[in-house]
Amino acid sequence: MDKFLINGGNKLFGSIEITTAKNAILPILAGCILCEDKIVLHKCPLYADVVNMIKILKNLGADIKYLTKDAEMENNCDIIIDCSNLKSYNIPHELASVIRSSIFSLGSILGRFKKAKVAYPGGCEIGARPIDLHIKGLRALNVKLTDKHGYIYCEGKDMKGGIVNLDFPSVGATENIILAAVLTKGETKIINAAKEPEIIDLIKFLNSMGAKITGAGTSVITINGVEKLNGCEYTPIPDRIIAGTYLVATLITGGKIDIHNFRPDHNQALLEKLKQTNNKWKIKNDILTVKCDGKNKAISKIETSPYPGFPTDMQAQILALQTKSKGTSIIIENLFETRYKHVPELIKMGANITCKDRTAIITGVEKLYGASVNATDLRGGVGLVLAGLCAEGYTTIENVHHIDRGYYKIEEDLKSLGADIERID
Ligand code: UD1
Image (cartoon, protein in one colour):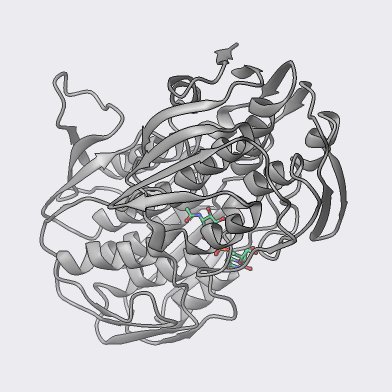
């Protein structure tokens, strides 16, 4: 398993271009299953989760071509997806277990074949992550579901539109139900739907193929089933979490960077909280420029919540920032119950954190010190990278394959900004 070796203390300087959002392109790739024409997706990133999702599509029988010089997949390349000859409605355990987003393919496969067999999904180890809301939603569309030996079996020959009342605005359940309803006769209404920018992007993509979906970005989404979808060309949105990660990385080390392809409208909750650090930045067109000295005031309270609230996917990075900020900060993690696995690792580096249940209290210290730490999930792992960048001495981070799920060669990006970081095995 690869590790990162970081010699902390370098400030970050230069510019970086934000690549496509993992959480946008994953459901969009699942959506391709619904279409029998060719689809061109621009700027497809090579995060491990995306590579695995492409394997899932190929396993179903999709023909996928890369529009690159050597016809091999490269980061940010354009791809053509042809799902006209799908031969399978089954996602086997070996593929589904490595990526939670395999669950979206359930809705798409059902929409296309009116039946599906999908192994229970994998993904980050950050809590129970049940799929009861997905199942409840599909049942409201008249799907019969059973589970046996780790597989979910779905029978959808009598599928029809219905009303789905979500107890919680789950991102994945909202996407899955949308995907199941697009080719299902009648009107489906999702009440208490998630409002994330990635949901809006999925709906824009589906509507560009002829789907009839309204209410994107609001808590009520209405889908009127259509007979078929046409091919399209689409560029998904940039990754707001990667953008936030590089912004926080610069605040923690000091320096000056330009973040290109930055969407302030998608990062409002983060920018609002970061104002409390006493730093300033400029945003012109889609470029955010930040210049700072690495000295930050603590943010008094941060509470994660569904969009437009503070994103749980930025919790580990902002927590790392608080470990070296002046003052005390309280973080409350409302989305995932065990999303503090980076905390004991940060304590090894000298951080002062008390953690109980969903609350972490962080008192900033003068210095963090390099240590040998372990990444146990994607965002927690990247939080450790940020701590390593500002720590005194060498930090080794084990199991960086978790980070590769949502960042493509993060070490190359950080090196290009002046960080001293290497991937070692
Ligand atoms: C998506 C994102 C993930 C992000 C999360 C919350 C993708 C690929 N992943 O994950 O990066 O951290 O949103 O913003 O887009 N829940 C249930 N039952 C369900 C479904 C969810 O109880 O059937 C609970 C979960 O356990 C969790 C909460 O709802 O506590 C939020 O989960 P959800 O919004 O579904 O997250 P994901 O779609 O898994």
